[in-house]
Length: 330
Image (tube, rainbow, N blue to C red; front, side, top):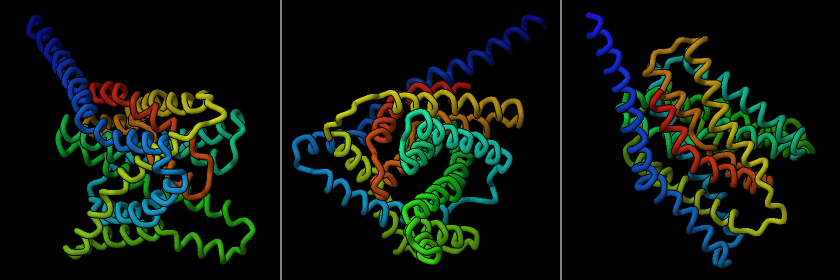
């Protein structure tokens, strides 16, 4: 009997080991055949930017397309189809606590230790809390564990768009319109395309309205262009020569995003909330993912210095191939 118990324990360890090995293999395969080809768009942007074929002004135009058309289409589609009734709000409350803590820590470090301007500090906070869900975590979780593991990640995407992303846009609009009247500032906020798309998507989703087929095809065609175009613009921005090439802040941001955030999330989910593994692991994988592209898009749109954010996205994207794999094997 004792031997059988020991065998059972060994098999359990073996299952975890298999998941970890397969996770690492899949992460490498996903990086080689999924992530690297996509990020090669950024490498192409970097090369063409170095050759001055595409300039900083061209990157701004591309970013404008993403901000005003690409991202609103993506937001509307995601929110209008989100299965809100299936969300685990206990997990969402815990995850929100971790990411708002990370957001505030990023803002304070950037503002008072690295002396960055307020709008940039806000976007640095967003950069290390709002992760790159769609490009990295979602396809990995679905392949490793199946569609059930995707639901917690979809719910985090929904929450982040509704609170973190929208909240940062509102704060940036307030800071950008300090000289305007309250009514003009309010008008600018409610007419902001991503916020309009967010509200419309929320209404469609909660009312369970069906998007007309032709319009959905139209939106999908635009939405899929958002990440590639933004990555191309990121490459152009990174190709510019910088007087100050100090990597201290980008490395600090990467460390917080890839190590502190997932460890913090693991503590909250394991001890305080005691979540089941099928809910806990996808959320920890999300916390271990790289800095999101949306902060870079907002930096260009609001004329905020974007080089620190761009470098953090690049470094954390490479490092996350290890951290997501480790999180998947927990």
